[in-house]
Length: 469
Image (cartoon, rainbow, N blue to C red; front, top):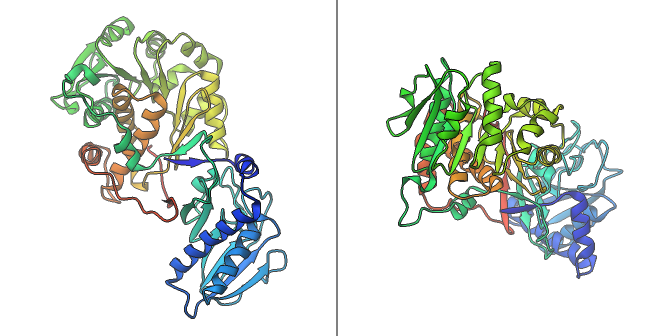
């Protein structure tokens, strides 16, 4: 996992460093210079323009310029405040104008046909939220130091992100970015003496005409490692599409809470919500079930709707004695919190998790998972192919299986989202169906860890991503 720190946390880390600032600047400049040479394919005949500000970001750029000159690169340094509207022709522009602490608008000079390497963060991009005006720098690659910054995760202007180790201590980070390899390294494996109930799950889901959500969530739980899945569905729900391996349990059409609670027997984790419907009687049953379920619980879709807003949701969850993971998309988050997540998605998820005393997974271009104590995992894995019906139900099954395997709700959410995205990336970019993930998931989970792309300590690619529906 890659640490993620806010700009304020990064300033504190810098201030606590035992090395002098000048040494850290030289290390940062060396990292930028190495990346620049790699992007240009060497130094011979190469020309670089460095746009340099007055702060440490500019100092990093000037240190890189000095190193590149020593390697024979023709370097021109221009001040950020008086840079021409169009920069001189060159092979690479190094953007060292403004760093993660910048606030306001920035109109970047035109780099022409040159590639752009940003130092720490593209100038004009907010270090916390990734928000930027139209004039901000759009980089091909960004070299950041010691840890990712939240703005790098949420902006499409950063290109490839390279995290370079310059000797700073980030061990106190409370946010981490989950890579696909982390899933294979951290997901518990079944012991040799395991039986089907070792990681059994139940899925309380479905309603007449909405059996697909129940089937997808149930099958996904088994494909993600659950040894047994009990699909607990109200009367009249056709569950044939769930597959022969899923055991169907029929609930009464009304007041099904006692029967659903009885179906939790021997289950290691339970999901509730996909396709259940939103009638008042169903909502009342869901609320009673959530409050009393004697196992770790994942609440999604119609289950989240049943919880209500703010104090009502908190009241239902207050009586729980077992871990709870809520998995809203933006609309469901807005209903739960009483307001949309806004630009600071990490801050918003942390706030809701603390308010509800539950772990919250907010789906989005970058999935954010926060527990009530403020620990956060983010998963940038994904593809626009996931913007199709049913992929959210598959994610529900995956995180429920991971919870049953013994992971905490925070880990189940973060690793589950990463596995879900990695499986999708192995499928077709166009025409991927939610059901296709059922075959792709075990292939990813059974395979060797994917080889990381490493420069510095790790690298992190950003591209257009869309969350599960």
